[in-house]
Image (spheres, one colour):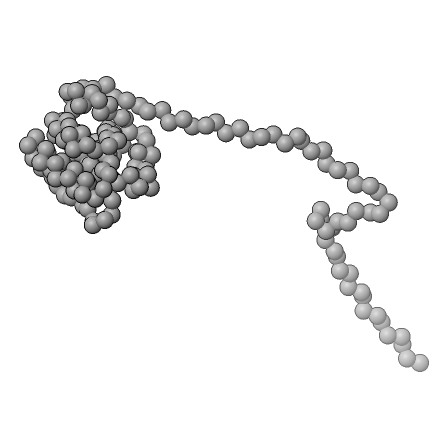
Length: 174
C-alpha cells in the first residue's frame, strides 16, 4: 500500500485592510454625512495704492531742467519716481507720454538739449522705429517716453511702486 501524499501547506495571502477609498458601505447601515461648515466668503483686503510722495528738497539740476523741458513740449502724465536704494541702475525714473511717434521724437530731442544745457551727459538712447517707447539713459536718471498704449501695456509705475513719487508741480515751480 502506498503512503498517502502529503499536501503542501496552502499559501495564505494576506490582504491589506480596506482603506477609506476602497471600503464600501454596508447595505444595512446608513452612512452619516459629515457635518459641513457654512461656506464663508473669502475676505481679501483690497490693496489700495498709497502714493508715497517726497517733500521737495535738493534735486539734481539736470532732473529739474529735463522735467521742465518735457512739460514745455507738452508731454502728458509726467511722473518722477525716486528709486534711491531700490535700484542700482538709477536714482530717478521719469515717465512721460507723447501722443505720436513724431511727438516722442520731439520730446527726445528737447530732453537731449535740456540735459546738455544742464551739464549732464546722455549715456545712451534706445528707440526703435514705431515701437512707441523711447528710453534715454542719463546716468542717475532714466527717462521713459511712451505712447499711451505702450505706457498702459508696460505699466512701469506698477513695477516700481515701492519708489517715492516726487511731485512734478513742485519741480515745475522750482
